[in-house]
Image (cartoon, rainbow, N blue to C red):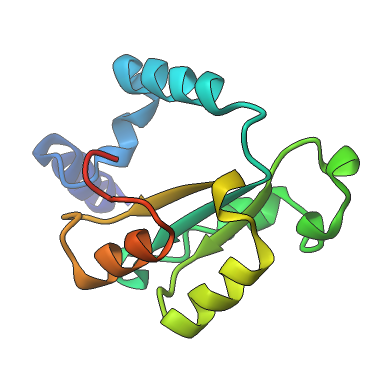
Length: 134
């Protein structure tokens, strides 16, 4: 147990597990709150697109916090946009999703380590958005 704790502490010091410090990054938290205030009420859906190689399924938190039928509820029942977390940027799957949403009323969040992968470029261009600076 101590060896594992020491190994994690070293990873944290090296910056390789930055998520440990996320709650303490006040500038990032402030910026997230600013963006949230700017987009509040402007979207019917939120699509989070990422390449599956970025780690374990990031949608676990969303699925744990929301009913599996959350997106089927009426807007009045939800009180928030529908949420789609896509870890596969397969063109057919993306096309099916685009049939379900109104792109102009959808906030797209594209996650990439480098921002320059083919998959990231394809998914952001398919949504009508650029990944540059996002």
